[in-house]
Amino acid sequence: AEQEKKLEPLEKTLHLSSSHIRTVLAEERMALCRLLRADTLDQKAVEQSVGNLGRLYTEQERLAVGHLVAMRGLMRADQKDKFFDGLIRGICEKCRAKAGSHTH
Image (cartoon, rainbow, N blue to C red; front, side, top):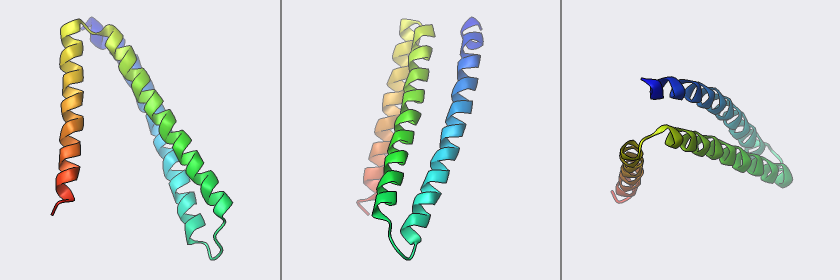
């Protein structure tokens, strides 16, 4: 119960920050699509947009990792092991699913 109370503000902060970054990412992807669709291709603007996307993805990953680090600090050793083992399994399953979908 005490852990849940400590996690609540972390979850809210992550949700708000992630939501904002997802919105900005979507806006940047749309801007890139407009650039690519234009009659005349502005290669410099395309490269700038790709760079913006890269920075946003990096920021999104930093937020997620920062959240995991904060959560880790609240966990007992057994909880930490179980939690991160579950994350690793989930990542592996997604990789296998994607690899399997390309073999058909």
